[in-house]
Image (cartoon, helix red, strand yellow):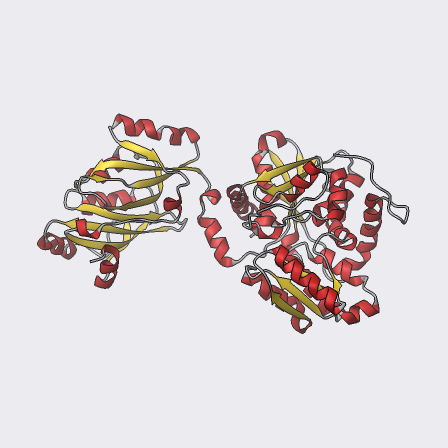
Length: 518
């Protein structure tokens, strides 16, 4: 993607100006924070080095650019204050610099900004910052901030499209070069507006001209890919915000001028691949990355065969993730260690058939999710999510079911499965009981409970279970009895604690009524 660069009025091309400013930024940024470590991540067949910007003063790399930019403000500019727009991490960098330099800062953030990032801005800036929530996207926040700057005379500190900001981000590459772990064969660098990849790639290419620089973007937010294809920055119609730190509709003009020289190719990653990378960082380094921070690793894992034997650099750009989002990511299919497949299977609606299915077609397999609600008198359609390390195991499932005479359909990725919409017709139930079951997550524990307590006695009318990774599995199951007497006898002989399970407690009547609509 290299081509001749235009010359600026000072006689320097954009790349030479950026290199010069990175040298000057060395003296400025370390007034506000210290260098971050470069750590080795052990993955089979790969040599990956991780720049841990999640361990910086604001738990993200953005402090470098914001502090470098604000350190060069004139006395008059400092007195007038600054204004900026940010989805979170840049705002924290501005807040950090504002407090250290005694500058008043107004920070516009989208209304959807995670609470953890808002709280961090207040923590770093103290009385020197004012947060103004505006719009539902980063672009709307930018518009509001620019209007403020025009009216008030405050200096607008751009999150990425600014020479001093790009130079500040470039200091992280300087630390990589000085670490002694190079040279690197490739660097996988995530892109939002392009400030970080511009500064970092320029510095890496200066010292290691043969390094391959790969720009990494989310599939639904590839603004730099679109810019490079068009020959200029273009605005995307829609932007996916799962990786909120890189959710930018249009790449910056300045970063684009650099990236068209330094970026060798662009790689896009899915949200599921990012979730898997977040888990890998946790398991390998005990690093809790925000989605944008794991994008580089996601692309490396996607291309692991081509990268075997090569030394690869990635940057964990931040760890400012909302705790609730972290929980959702941990439970997502993308973060699962193994491959998965969801199948809905038709079985006769009679006692014992569900257990028969588990004993035969699903024997020896890991059932990660089990959803079922009774909807018909004659047929049941339970849905099972099976996980396995070997793809062949999942591919063999349809054959197993066919040999036993079971009809099935693939519901992998289905929206009702994802949102756990489990319908149940209460009018088809005679004398139901719902049990909250806590069992030990070991092979056979759930099966043994069903075999010992349920087999042949009762119809299974409801099942809601999802593997959580805990040592204790939790399920809500419904049983339907033909008579009230058989129901009472079952409950009277059901121990609260037993072999393979920690507790089994019937739900109260109010919960039962809500579940069955009766």
